[in-house]
Length: 86
Image (cartoon, rainbow, N blue to C red; front, top):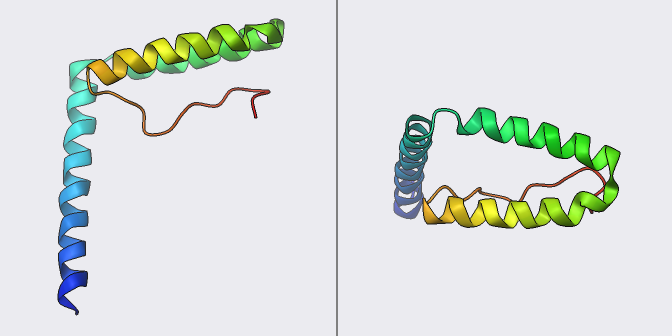
């Protein structure tokens, strides 16, 4: 196996281990946050069905949540999408 491939595989394993550690610390640091995020998503979906104009408010809340996550190094890996959003 080429040296560069071996080095890349080693680095990938290190990164995978680090991601696992971060996931574990995230769950242990805030046990209820995953459930809370699911509940928020359900409420957002319901609110958007009732009033599509809430999308702007939801986006503002998402930006605020992202700031909190970033302050605590909990930033999501990709932005959330909502029903009706392009």
